[in-house]
Length: 148
Image 1 (cartoon, helix red, strand yellow):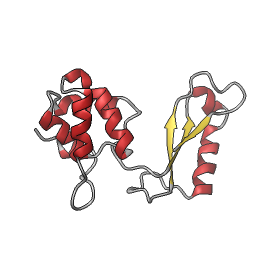
Image 2 (cartoon, one colour; image 1 turned 135 degrees about the vertical axis):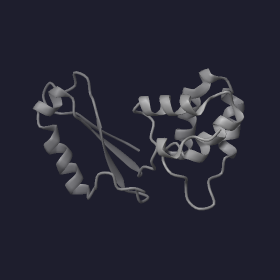
Image 3 (cartoon, helix red, strand yellow; image 1 turned 60 degrees about the horizontal axis):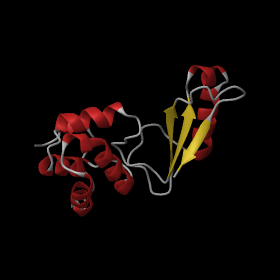
């Protein structure tokens, strides 16, 4: 079964990607529908995002449906369907952080690092900005975090 093109990121670079990791992950984690989250986490950890070819391979060799993959991977914000740079900077945009001027901090990060929203693919070694919610973390100032 193929995952619909409009539901996730376009295919990887010409020549595709090496799917050996996907086969090994399925062997270790499992083929049943309940393995969908651990498989997506493993694939993203390996490729740094969820390549379409890898998701299609999961559907080919497991009992996991394309609908399940799309539903889970678009519901949870931890999953990425686009390649990311070396660093992901997350700025809280929850109500408390917003009141403490998180949009200004977000804009300052983007200006300083030259980040353009929605620009893909991300050049290797670059940074990307992402919104997130830091529950009850903005007592004094907005929260932000950087992950490699």
